[in-house]
Length: 560
Image (tube, rainbow, N blue to C red; front, side, top):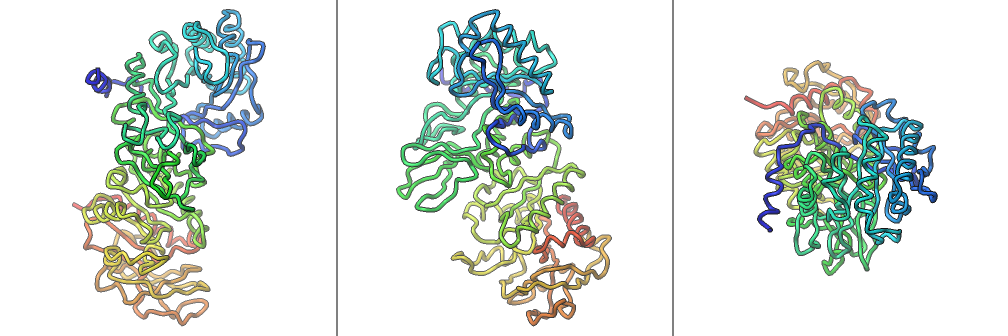
């Protein structure tokens, strides 16, 4: 039996008929965050509820649904659906038991689809034949569920979407009977356990229950769902246990005796207590990247998540999924490392706005992460360029350092660094990263101009691709103009330097020979470092924008 299950995916891999992958995000009626259509393909609005009269649907917060549906005006490819049900949502059993009620329910769904300009209906009946959610059930639910979905398809027609959310174990539903009427199946491959077990592990380990994402996908295939209709669910939240409650991804942080670890067998992270016992299981950018590998390798239809509001403000999780799944197969991918706030936050925000606009017009995909924890060799395999936008050369886990060194030394992609990347020395209790110091020209940080100053930059190598179309001299505003223990010039190729006599206001913080843009030709990876990177006003400079865009194009290229 085990051997048979192991072969199930093999038989289906590569056979999917649908080529467009989907990213389905649940957006709730009780939050006010507006989703970014660029990060998903389908929005499931949660929730509509079966009326107590069993013959129609009540929509929670209809004004918010109208606002969500209006997003399609600016993104015509976006699909918006009403999800009916949810955990603890009843009246399904009674409604589905009657042919007349099924018809009236479906007709009311059609009314709502037309009134709100929706693209279809998602049924989240948890679960037919079970009263686990505190709702009524009947042994007839299994057959009546199929009749309900058939009625929905007949009423909504072929051009509108009909989808369902299903239990990880693939029980409760006659899949062979219902699949012909469905566009795809959203598997709730989360909430499969409480801590200390992980609730959304990809593969089994000592820290997981028997049910995992991989086991669930195979169970659905065995039950009769073709891979081109399988959408794997992921959580944007952590699930805890007795010691600590669950939390949205945005709130999962180290501290107060808790730390974050990664289970390399289950391929998911945990928060653990001082004794090393898992207290919350969750997904992060690293685990989602691995799950995306799984989805693409097995040619599943796509990914679904609950729910949009759990992500952090940087969109770490949704951007990871978008960069891997949303029609990105032929796009080159950029990984951005940033701190996302602090004294450089305004620069970072402005830079990300500019970068996303550049990426949209040049067919690139951008993912931003705000710590180096997800960085591994496998993770970096998915990226053609790393931009160290606002991120220092310390706080990196040892595995991330090793993966980054391999990426640069072996030319697995390009690198662009700004400002913070040469904050080299002993800071915040972290030792000097000697390799990175050598990478930057064997330098350590010495001082900076705290009040900020404008400075005139002189191009030294006008023939280099990064400097194409850049004036021979130009002024960059409001920077700190780092100084180092020594000039990096003897160990790097300098493209531009700052005239320290040009500082406005004048400053006694000087270095003499002061390079500010350089490359390290000793590394296989194409790389360029820009010392500026403190003020959002840099993007008012045509020279700065030109250098940045030139650098992206050059570092994404390859030497002969």
